[in-house]
Image 1: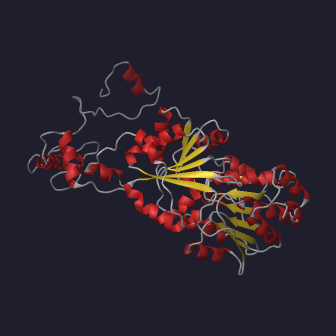
Image 2: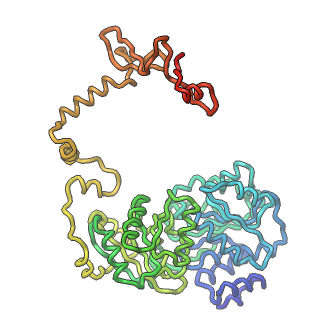
Image 3: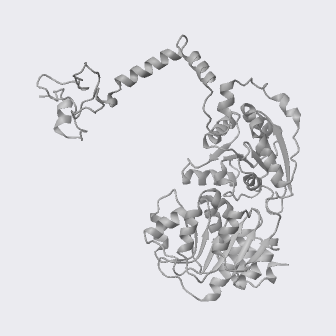
Length: 497
């Protein structure tokens, strides 16, 4: 089938040719005809299968056919997505497909000033692409209303639940008009997703499943390297140095701190790279993503916030520097490569404490990941012997430090100090803590003074700030430039007299 055979308006056919589409993907071929008939749809497809065009083109077609006009502070179609990056990319797709029409689009997401977003909504928009938090915020400010909505799309539903958006989704669904067309897309369909879909879709929706659930794209060549955590950075450097064909590389790690650490390691090795994660501002994240798309940097390091929010062409390699806790996340990570019919490579590093995660991934994907070339280990420094303290520090999550390791660490920092000494000093600090009050347990009755010692039964209070002969406290207010107190301070005068 060709796109010309689909019942799309000539402006949309022209836009499809402009972006270079000739043959629809399986999900597009199965979804577009049913959506043009006005049916609800439940789509199960992996990332990179052409989902956006599968729902964007029929929505644009029906918006053109309806003849309705947008009203101020309203939208006719709503696309709900989990991340800012994904929302921006979906809006860009809508703009490309609607470039030869008068259909308007807007994108709203958190992390930036909402002023420009509210101004874009004043006259109303045809297609609104949004993240749940910012959408509810602007609805609360009466900047946008959903009362005239005609189409509702929930994309990446399983990721929405993973990120804790279930309550926000239910709030949004409760505001939707009863008569609407619903589209529900997810890469996996666990029980929670099935129950959520039942509350959104009308009875007997069209179900489109283009691949077995949670199965990686077969065009991805996978490799596995078992290595301790301390040498993962060295292994990544050696692999990048040994394979110059790795020109567009995504590296996924578990934590924001870990992403920044990987960037420092690669920069020391002369590799152009950048990191995107939740602590980065939206401007910095978009800048890093743009530089990666334009191949100004070779490596982009990301946390799972970008596992589905990155739509970059020609990503040659994906590294799982840390294996994810959820095996489904592994599928989405490696789905960043081998897109648009091309091949890709996914390389995973597995530390000893990640073996359980590896088994879960192989069980879900039904693929035994082959091990990579072990000769690369000859170029790495020898493994360091782990201490009980380092094993606990490197373990996933926050574990309480082992008492013996804690004592050994204290002895190394303070030779000769014993646990009894530490306990005595802790008791002394507790007794002298000015926040503990007097002997009766009450706090100091004097404002601006603190209890510093106990004097028998009297509990004498010693003020913490010095006083002059007249009894005036040296405590002064926060002075603004030009105040009399600040003038006296410049002239060397006394605050007491």
